[in-house]
Length: 331
Image 1 (cartoon, rainbow, N blue to C red):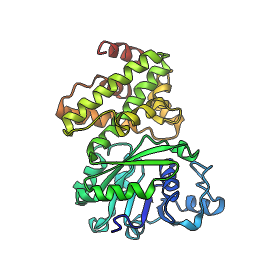
Image 2: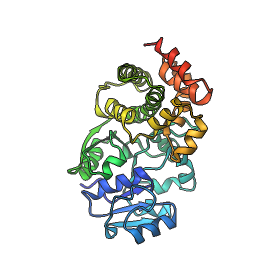
Image 3: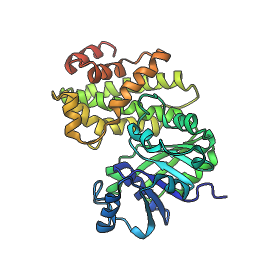
Image 4: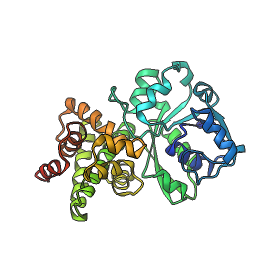
């Protein structure tokens, strides 16, 4: 029984473009929602995304483009959501609950919904009454830029419905993508939020010219902090060394392609948070994640000195060198 059906990508940014390439390595066709008509026109003129990952060429006969999100969802069975988390509510605000009935909603978000302090699975369940069995999560380690270069990448698909997760994993696995499944939906989503915060911390330390020895200790402590938080918020048996926890955190913290590491590095070098964000011209999800996790942790009271430090640097203007010096006392 086919539980996946027609796959739709929501989002025309870097990550959405990489996901479209990955899906089309195995599938013959996708539906693809891109908000701007001029961006879709650019695809038809150039054969690639005119704005992101322009080195990926697409066979346009394999794609049906939509600028109407309701129609894209209606015509599809599995919906992979790949928009920046701060824009999710804007994208979904006019969609009726009935539009999602019978759809397999898969979050490829790398952040948390600001102001709601909810991961995407919780947001979909609470606001659109989607059963958790119809919700999935997709997580790395998988940088969009490496997908464009056809370097081997890894994704985990998590869902309470193991059959759907397994079918989607099989549907997108290819010579450049290895997949596995999990049932830790919320845990993997929260890990994706935390790894962006830790990547900012790694970048700040890089900008301050702390060496590899310190970065190794920092990452070790980030791993412990992540594990402790997940144990308290989503208690279940898990192995924090799995690729969708530790692996995703390491690649985000070390890679030259990481926006969050880049943001942190600029701050460590002396840029203000605002100036660094403006110069990047791309969203670093960890900026929003730091505030959301800080507020969420007001309820759970988990000892999280690294998240606290990043929050103080980003939102309380604590001088980075002093912040890291204080952090060392916790290691």
